[in-house]
Amino acid sequence: MPYFAIGIVAVAVILLVLIGYVKAPPDHAYIISGMKREARILIGRAGVKVPFFERLDKLYLGQMTVDIKTEQSVPTNDFINVNVDAVAKVRISPTPEGIKLAAKNFLNKKADAITLDLQDSLQGNMREIIGTLSLKEINTDRDSFSDQVMMKASKDMDKLGIEILSCNIQNVTDENGLIRDLGADNTSLIKKNAAIAKAQANRDVAIAQAEADKAANEARVRADTEIAQKNTELAVRQSELKITADTKQAEADAAYEIQKQAQQKSIETTTVNAQIARAEREAELKRQEVEVAKQKLDADIRAQADAERYRQEQVAQADLFRRQKDAEALRYEQEQAAEAQKKAAEAAKYAREQEAAGISAVGKAEAEAIRAKALAEAEGIDRKAEAMKKYGEAAVIEMVMQALPEIAKNVAEPLSKVDHITMYGEGNSARLLQDIINGTTQITEGFTQGMGLDIRALLLGALGGKAAAGSAAPAVIQIQNPGTQSGTDETQPEGPEE
Image 1 (cartoon, rainbow, N blue to C red):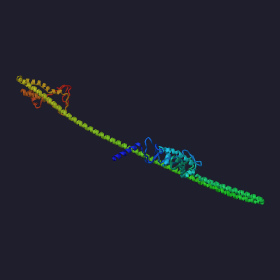
Image 2: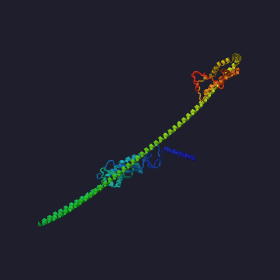
Image 3: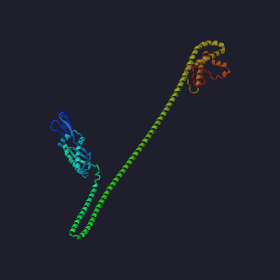
Image 4: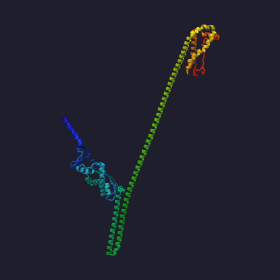
């Protein structure tokens, strides 16, 4: 059963979504119309709109501000052109009747469009009210002015479904600056009072003159005798009246001049105060401009100094980093060069040792080969030994001397296979010659052992006592190939060495 209820609720929600569920915010009126004769109005609540059969329209109900300005000067009832700037707060009347009226004029319009439509009507109402008031009334009693504008405009706004919440006069100006000169009314009033006093004095003079004329006429009628007296009295009276009139005129003129001077003094004082205030404002403005320029200059100088210091720091850091890297690179190169030299020296040393060992081995191998050959021929030599004895020692020495160069050539022949020999250190060339001599000596010793002939003894005996005295030193046979200079540690023959 609970699953069945949940399914019903889900189906109902889906149906509501499909058929058009709407929800109006508090500042808008949703008007659903189409199926019923009377449209439904939703404000801050939800409703359902049937698709295809009903339509949804919106009407903005929030507060709107309308700027009311007289684009052209408007004459007041005292024929003074003025410009008035006012602001009105309006909204669509929240009553059903107001919403219906507003829907006919402002449906689906934005707030800006609505205020633009209302602006012309409110401006016209304000211009009508301005024409019924004087400049002084507009300027001194703005509350009454704004109330009259509201009352006048409310009649037109009610027809549109609009409610005026407030209307405030922001500014009132005129083309000739008369508002600024409203103080001149006091001067005009003083002039008017002085003129009235003067007129009254002239009137009193005229009345007195008429009364004097009447008395004179009566005196002439009564008696000619009293004419002179009456004339005298008349003259006296005229003088008195003239004095009185002159006094009154002088008083009036003095009062007018005093009031004029007071008013002129007030105007001059106001002008001086205004000039002083303007000079003070200009001085303050210049002081502020100087202060701003000073602060800007300080900021620019400080910024330039900071930028230059930062640039110098970066340049110094970059130079220090470059020097460190150069030093590290130089130290690394020196270490690598030293390591390379060390390895080259070790390789050269090892090569020299290998070359020396190879040369020695080759010499010994050749010597062994020669020795083997000599031993092979020993048997033949033994057979000839007996025959040689017949020739004597001289013949043997001659034969040996003839064979020694061939022996030495065969011993040194392996060196002819070497293209280039580099020797380091002292005594290496002597050691090479010593190896050649040792090889030759081993061959002669082989003759001695195989044939029983002591070649060395025969040679010493032939050379005599001098040779016997130098027998302690080994015999040295120096073989120099063509193109090779003796006495050098480095040998590089042009052709094969022998």
